[in-house]
Image (spheres, rainbow, N blue to C red):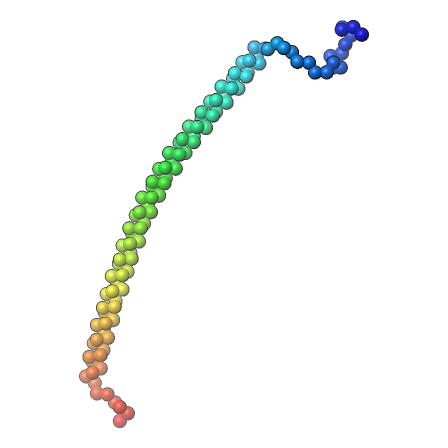
Length: 108
């Protein structure tokens, strides 16, 4: 069989040693695109880090305000309870004094 009679489909795989300019340009474009994509991802990660830090700082300030407000409420409740205790003691004292004025009925 001569070389001209061969069917290219029957020969099997063949690798051409020549490089096409189109292949080189395409490979460079894909590489540059991948680098730009990675740089964009890096920018987005940095931006997210900054946002996370800002939100964390805001949350800490909010927590501190809430702790102060809660402490104020606790103090008000304690003051109210102390005032109620004083009022109860005063009423108890008045009741004791007024009950001493009335004669006791010892079953008579």
